[in-house]
Length: 161
Figure 1 (cartoon, rainbow, N blue to C red):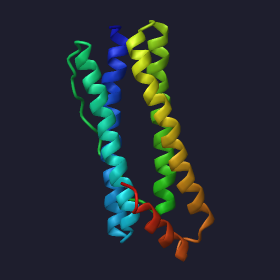
Figure 2: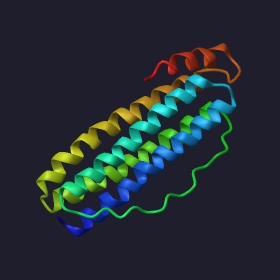
Figure 3: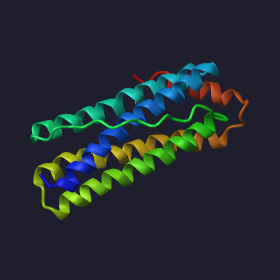
């Protein structure tokens, strides 16, 4: 397996675990604001991101590559509002999309078919991730911060499993 491609996936494992860590921090913020539905949505997101990191870990192990985990930075812990959280969520997902696309580009460059097939799932997943964050962000932009609509959205988001 191409060494640059290995390194990109190793780095992405860290980014996926960081995403999990970031979303758990966001869940904590929502819980402190008594927005348990938003917190539930973020907790599901946390699990999904951890699963993404696990998939990449297993893929490298299956390819005979020893995974070396890297330190995770501390995520931000202060947020101004639910709107602020989802602006940061969308920005983060756009960054992850760029990183995933970089892996796909390198797999194309070195014609690594197993990685090309593997990474395509993540390319498609990022479309969904950005769509979900954008949808919630656009709704929050329509609401006054103290309106009942925020609590209705909180209730709706709490149904995510």
